[in-house]
Amino acid sequence: MVMFHAGDSEAQRVYDNETEKAMSLLPQGQKPKFTFCLGPEDILVRENDIDLVPCKLASDGLEGYDLTVPLDVSRYISAKEVLAVSDLPTPECDPIKVGGHSDIPGKRGK
Image 1 (cartoon, rainbow, N blue to C red):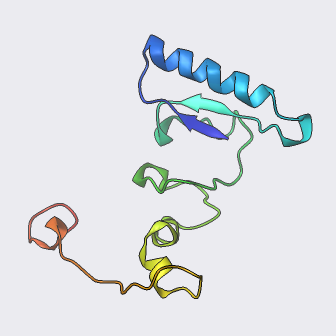
Image 2: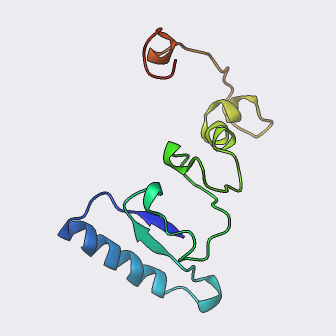
């Protein structure tokens, strides 16, 4: 498991230590091997014997890694539209499409 720091401060180091303590309470068979880094570009793939990267958060910084699920699929699965069009028991809703800044020529995303 790779965990990203929010920064390199004393408060962040305390949080990391608390995370390590919490993980140490898990039974050995459930305890993941984990490492901390500042962001996707700092993942030490070879050093941590990582062959595939499953991601909970679809970050653009993960492009270029061998992912278990492509980033666009991860983003779609995390979107609320998935619930609206699924057959899961959820409140009735209709997905809507909205435009944003990326629709403006010359802006980021175009």
